[in-house]
Image (cartoon, rainbow, N blue to C red; front, side, top):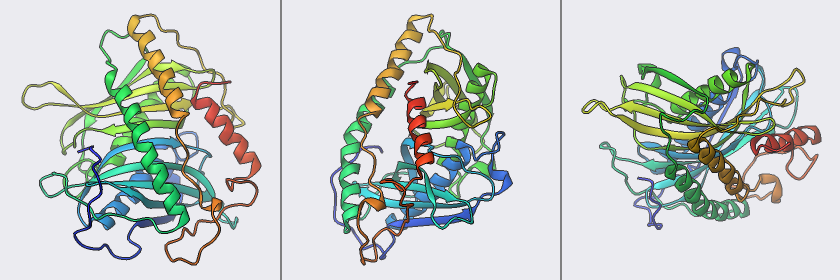
Length: 370
């Protein structure tokens, strides 16, 4: 289901403008976490909802998430802010759709929204039996779409390297690294209309497990800074017993890198089945909102040393990823498919200088640098 094949011609032309989905709303008190900011789990559910809408609108059928990659949480979102989640198609394979999701938020009194996060999420179109089906080919038109299409193609190879490195590592019960495990049943409120758990809800579980593990290790509140990647392997039906285990595999001066496995128990042989795997980086913030030093974890077993090196290798691979171009990098175009996202003129990325400094610091936290 995760194989990206060559393009095929569409069986029927999609409706004009159906390659995007935009959700706008205001942040409510129920959306924020313990620290008073929108937590990573809520943000991931917003991203999944918008991307799913774009994928189903383009394909005309049900879709399932295959993977999510490289989510930077550039700035915090607070209660009362206006949020825009834009999901745009940037590449299609035979059965897959690569969706770029950009989240912008701002105080209601501000004219321009500031980018909060951006990530790529891949959906696969499926029939009623869950088998992959072909999707119409998407062709970029504007300069921005052409650039993002090229970047999506380049990312395919690097993403396969990262996913291969993640899949090659083994995690045993004999490992001595700090860990936290959440156990519960998949509830009716967790599923889509097809009776399977939504990808956004699985991502929320992953974020919550990373939070528990990080908070236990630091003895303080933590917040998600970066999600290195999440891979989905199989659907979760309602009523399944879910186990989400987060384990520390590396610590930087101000960051905690956790590997999270989501498993269910096979009803036939009682063996655990892996349904999702992700890597999440959390940081602990001081009263000024700055990342503060965290206790350092020192591996004391062969497995611990191997996983620590694995985390460092993934850091190196992530540095090779080319960021997606912003709308501000291209001049306005009258084409009706051109992006209408606005940016602050303070710098090339459209982010105020003070916020950009925080983004730079976040990038250092996630890579374990000072």
